[in-house]
Image (cartoon, rainbow, N blue to C red):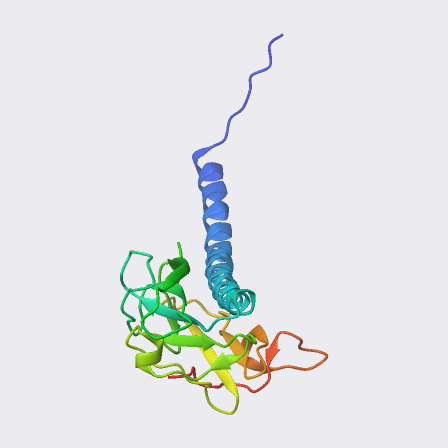
Length: 206
């Protein structure tokens, strides 16, 4: 004798749909939080890597090198600096005034990371020893000055337009000695918090 198969009733189906909707509502904020934090971390890591590349180029070439922001899309080393520019250029300065300039590399400040803003100095210069150097706008040749920051440190800050809770507040620090690190703005570095900054809640270098 054939047995009649019983399907889901409308009430049972509505219960299942409600459970799925509730589960999705609870997990979506966590997924969004993870996604934004991952973008902030990736942007900070890229910025640190780009600064380290400029530093390495200065040591390798035994020349002064400028890492600066621009809005121009070319890559010659003659691009004008722009505060808050969406792109970056690593420029190798000539040995003598009026000599040829070269761009070691160029790229995007926040590549594929919508809604993330990077604040900090328009230009950072490195001497042949790999340490930050102070140069005038005339010396850099890009219309921006380089300083060694305040209290022996240069700070870039990363912010996001997202209103999601528990987002990372990351900064990229460059010290007068030439060391680079990405750290959590609201945490003081210690053995228990190795991802913290040497000082908390510091403003980015202007």
